[in-house]
Image 1 (cartoon, rainbow, N blue to C red):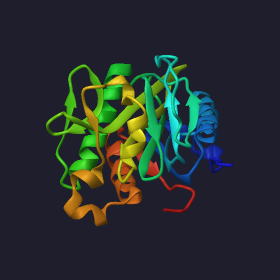
Image 2 (image 1 turned 90 degrees about the vertical axis):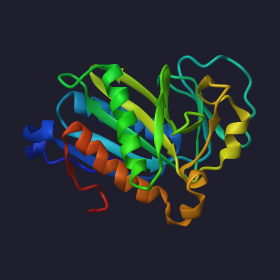
Image 3 (image 1 turned 90 degrees about the horizontal axis):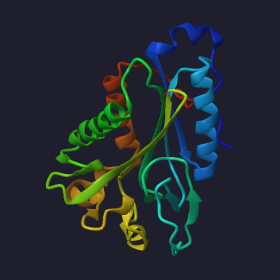
Image 4 (image 1 turned 180 degrees about the vertical axis):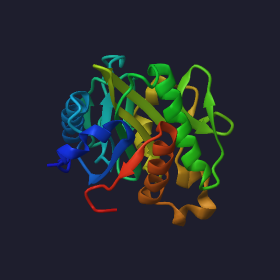
Length: 232
């Protein structure tokens, strides 16, 4: 069972400037969802700092609140109905999943938040020499030509605290997307960082992308990171 490391009550006064970076390895989707809800409540009450969870999921298809009620061939993956925004997407090994659990009051609204997450993803991937773009009217981060999706975003905001987040296809099995219309977008493809940087793919891991994401996330939000449960 994934658990959040305990927080020193003395740190509560510094909550606005701290962000806890927690690396969880591979966690089942429902377990990570329950953990997010728990942390969101603690963040809302000022009992723990804003938090960034970094992890992978086993093969999972998730339906957002706007997903049509249609049959889905699971291909052996778990299917989960979620409370996040957006439509259906896939999570699985080789994909970095980032769940920021942050207070938005005094920072910006939902549109600002999603655009900021897109910038965090783009800035992170640029470190590896991958040019990216955003597409007007579509959420997420795409290849430079806007034809193939690299990262999907789906969030929920409750009581001024955002949770759920984004997923970057680092070395994901792209064939798993064949069973769905990812995020309801039928006229564009899905790709991975490794596929786009095939000549340097051996240098790419979920952990190396996670390092970049943690840095750029803290920079974008003005956070001071605190060590995760591994002491890194």
